[in-house]
Image: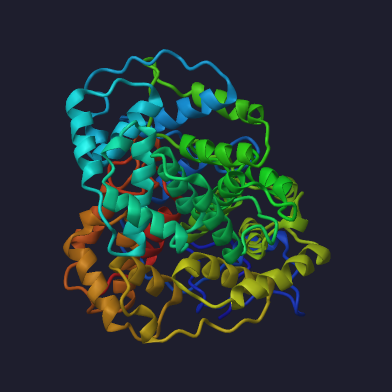
Length: 539
């Protein structure tokens, strides 16, 4: 496939890994030049009336770009949040800063409380310092008394964490003996990760359970899992955060062993410019940071940031203050190139400034950085290209599973950009069996099977039948895959209509939200919307 050296066409396609790059230059390592800004993954796209407004996409990206040329997603505006208010006040309390007076209207949290169990809504109210109405407390006590042995691992984690929340909310007396005995067995048998186990131990000891046997069991679970054998890295997503915080809390509970790098846990959980994104993240990372010996005062700037966004009544709106992060920068560039618009982000100086800690990067961070450079037309030196080549090769050739789809996808695209030869992911129809509809369509969108498995066809039909039950990303990926395989759907209108409803409001109308109406700009979902729009509709 020949690539033009002229200006990017009106629609340019960044593909899934099967669409390989043909880049200028020879040799195993590609030296990217500024001319590469127009040398993107391209294939013929027939003109059609799409639903993405290219000019609005460009305007939205421009409005979200800070003076350094980096993407920063906006504060979520909308309903006040009981949960976010609780976490914000928890952070303020832990760092020793005064919390503004809290005076929400009586109905302020009604809509949100209905989305939580009575146990958790009561816990959040107590954490926020709000009075708990008697009817709510009665409902919470009844829910606690109904806690029972869980049928599977996921439900078990929910029950164990609900027991902890019940204790924190002053509902521990309602915990049924059978559930307590079951929870004790979970700890003794190491059923759960460090995060759920340490909270279960805390819930049990709060009931008067003898502490020493539980601590001994927890210590054994940590040893069995290999926790603390290697130094933790800065968490990059929710699962990593909970794992690192859980281990820190667990080691603090059992006593930090001499051979566990406590300082490394504190360093990993210290405030980072791109690792904390909302009050929930701040509250959890702060707990782990303090458990690892960190001074809570280090989080004072974070706490002050949240105070700036409190409403007049002291409540926190549903929001996400996104510090610039490399993945968002990369997706902004991918969106811009996918629809063929300009995005004046990430100049070479800014991009190189983000590489100050390159020696500590995981492999996929090399891929993100390399792809951002390529899409922005930043000229890489021989040293920079060689530095990323091997990490990118490793992560592109890692075994693909459901949890690594996005990582694998980005790594293969970066390998293409660097000219690193890697094989396509070798997965067959069995990979898709048993997957939930959202997982099935994402796997097909990323891996681009030659023949569409029956499981994916069924998943697309399910999503199209009730698009309102799925997020924007899933709806867009279902539409994209259906368009790649004509005949999969007889009517794609329900998917397109759902995507239209997910446009962000006002000046960000070209970008899309995680779910319709939630006001949260989602760059990953927006990329897949643009990809689906660029695909020729089935005739």
